[in-house]
Image (cartoon, helix red, strand yellow):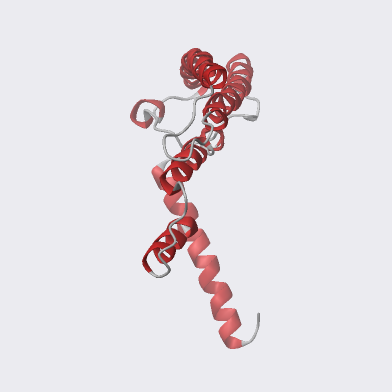
Length: 175
């Protein structure tokens, strides 16, 4: 956003646009697109079938979670392979942007690397789910614990109440 603001100000006020602005934005946009994929997976933030999974408990839940992660491992593995080939092709032919001839291989390398990190995260989750499938009484490790809507609402209410209490103490001088 800062670069966009500099581009607008530079172009309109000083008649000095950033050379290859569009190429630079396209080059760095991939970072924003893939940077948080594994983190989101670790928090259970991706789209899930909560209507079905929310009703399951114990081994049945851990089985379907493990199955979903296994399917994800296969799909992400295929994506890592194909995006790596895309990177290698860009590297070998010296692929570059149209305007300022910016090399494109670094941005094309980010995708298979980020997907490989996601694949490793999924592998870790699979191990966690298989552990729970073997013994559902163990505490969950390396798997996201997705809260129900009611649990999430309760947590948000508690956090808001704590914030109000802190604010009240600060106003009365006791904090």
